[in-house]
Picture 1: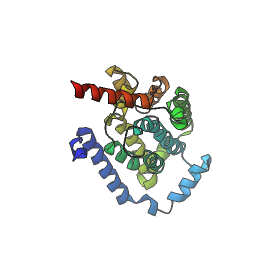
Picture 2: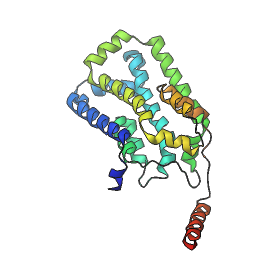
Picture 3: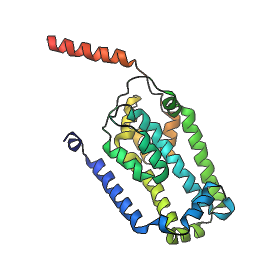
Picture 4: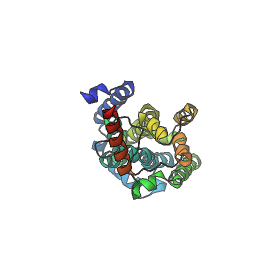
Length: 240
């Protein structure tokens, strides 16, 4: 009942996207096609001369997107009552299929208590955002200089794997501003200017990357001190 009370318009849209994309993927059944696994092998082993440069860029950008979300999810996950890791790992293999369930199940929370662990410190660094931005620029440059759009569009229309990974990439861009995950991350860092939200939300992929490069560091707290402060507040209220 508590979960139902927190359902809002954003989560309804995310749920519809999830159901629609899963249904569409099952209908096309890309894993049943004989050319899917040889193509994936070529992408993973960097056989660049045998694969479309545009498809190669999209394939590896689908590794950048989960890292962008991870830079927000793991701080957010500290305040949730379930683990983030399964959704992050799953999103590296299935894209939005494993990412959206986390975005639907999470409770909106703009607070962060405690110390950052080693993994969270890496994700919180501006240098991590810069690294992801540089990798993205390199992939886009490769696609522009070496890509054949005619060949890519033909594969998009005739090869299920190419079709679905391209749609998955677009959905990764689309859902970023649809979830309160981004809003909450801004609030945790004391960013209150709505113009920053729209500047990031309206520029697919590069908006979130620039945000990661420029956002303030996540403040840490002494969790025990916070708990004592909360208890003191409750005692004070009970005495009034």
